[in-house]
Amino acid sequence: MHPLIAPSILAADYVNLETEIRRVANADWLHVDVMDNHFVPNLTIGPPVVERVVAVSPIPVDAHLMITDADRWAPGYAEAGAASVTFHAEAAENPRRLARELRRLGARAGLAVKPDTDVEPYLELLGDLDMVLVMTVEPGFGGQEFLDRVLPKVRRVREAASASGLDVWVQVDGGVSAATIERAADAGANVFVAGTAVYGAEDAAAAVEELRALAAGAAH
Ligand code: DX5
Ligand code: ZN
Image (cartoon, rainbow, N blue to C red; front, top):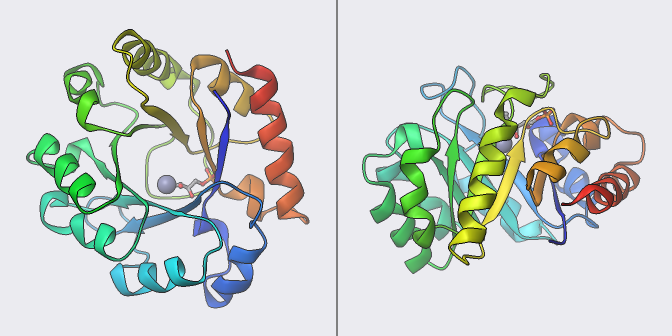
């Protein structure tokens, strides 16, 4: 599976977002972290800013919603133009209904699980999902260390998707870098979020290419 790189603007300069977004125009997706200070102890941006990011971004927007009451608030991000909307399993009352609603609004539907959340109960939803995000750090902050202990979950989702013949993407987010991306690709991930590893680099576009090449070389 062709690897997709999604730089996270959490590590960018929020005052100069348009310039920062252009630095990664060679990437596949722009990862936008939405945090509400309830689901995670951090606060970022909401629908009006996401709408402007969508308007200026040369690549499609992948919204990662770290918010409570996803059933109520996630559809607004599809309406804001995010091409992919991922909500957390821990924050959704009715994940199947929500995934279907996101698809109806024209977005790809993603379901995320925190490091300590078992993915098994959600595998029956795969037919209604376009992506499963296996968090490789505790959500809330950039710059944390990649958790190898979640890799079996990445493998499990990839296996279940292949077994059912579904074209479901498996995304990893947190601590993804040149030192860790091959392990994630080898476990079956095909979408790689990277904040620090891309925006912390002098040449962000070159960092995207390096990550893509490493993932392609390792992909199972
Ligand atoms: C963390 C966010 C990530 C974050 C990753 O909760 O979901 O997208 O930006 O940052 P790095 O790549 O620095 O771990
Ligand atoms: Zn994220």
